[in-house]
Length: 206
Image 1 (tube, rainbow, N blue to C red):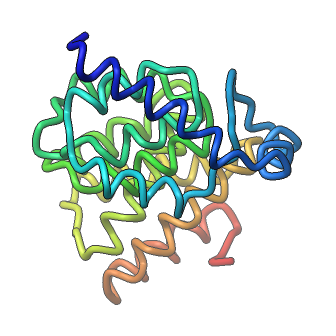
Image 2: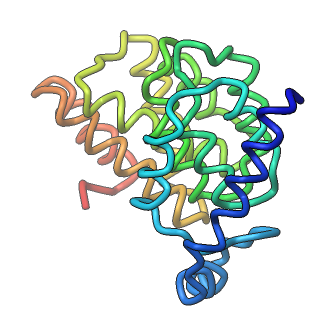
């Protein structure tokens, strides 16, 4: 690690003490969001810090390596989307500890990647629920931006979403339903496709 980056990471970690919110951290633990270290810093405070730091590939890489909630979130905020290689995204996805970090990665970074759609559709068929959840969150963001999938991707999305909606994981179910809702918002044809698909499993929009 570059010495300047190393010192910057240490300085950032020390600054978290000033943002410490024990009640927030305790609330996260109660919801099952466990971290090796969690200062309970709010997202607006972290966004302010990220804006001050600016985009920095090497800093983001080193921040992600830290097993600290705030470091992981800052990494997603400071990574330049245009510089992040697909294999680094795969590595980060494998190392994503929970739903909060997955959601932050999608919102702050993944939705801005030039190959975001390719990753999202690949993640839908992942063997683990967390990667699938990340895929549905990412597709929701892309659909909200008006990205329209082609016929092959539509069929893949609907097949995978129907399976997710029937899973035992309620978080996965919710993520799949949200993506289905945003898919339907792309236009009348998409809405009819979504409604027809949901009827196959005796469901409707919630």
